[in-house]
Length: 241
Image 1: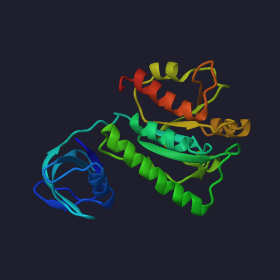
Image 2 (image 1 turned 180 degrees about the vertical axis):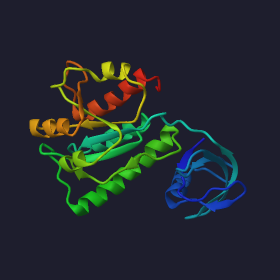
Image 3 (image 1 turned 135 degrees about the vertical axis):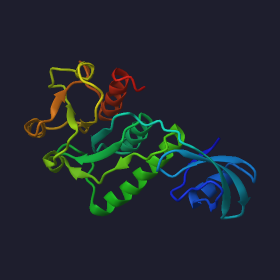
C-alpha cells in the first residue's frame, strides 16, 4: 500500500484534501477512486485512507482506520555530520533515516569542501527535508527525523548536551562496538568528520568538552560510510536491527 507524509490533522471519518505533492504522485502512478493509501503526519501512528475523488490538481481521501504502529529506536541517535561534497549528504541522510536516526546535525568544519551561504543553507535545508520525508515514506517510519540548521563544529561542541557524544577517529584506541557492548542502550550523538577528517585541533577541543573518541576498526572509512556504519553497529550491538 502506498505510504505518504501528510502534514495536517488526520481524524477517522474525515475527508481531507491531500497535499499537492501527494496528489501529484497519486496521478503519476494512476491511482483511482477506491484505492487505498497509508498516511502519516509525523505525530505517531499511521492511517489507512481511501481515495475519494481524483481531479486534475486535487485529490481527496477518506480516513478509515488508525494503526498505532511505531518502528522508532528505543534510544535517540543524533548524527552530527560534517558537510561532505556534492550529493553525498543526500545519501547519508537517506540511509540515516532508514536506520532510525532521531536527529541530524550538519556541521561546518575546517576541512569541509562545501561552504554554505545563508541563502544556500535555506535551500539545502528544504532539499534535505524532502529527502527525510521520502526516506520515511519508504522505510515505514511514522515520525520524521529532526533536521537542525548547519552550525560550526566548534560552536556545536560548546553546547551542553545530556547525550553521550562520540567522535569517530582513527586516533582512538577503543572501538565503538566494544564500547557499546559494555554500556546499556542510550541516547548518543555521533560526530563524523568531512572527507579529510576533523583537524587535530578540532578533535582536541572535542575531547576537552567531554566527547569520547572511538574508532570504527583498523580501516579508514569514507565520510559517507562512517556514520551509516556506526549507526548500524550500535543497532546491532544493542539489539535494535
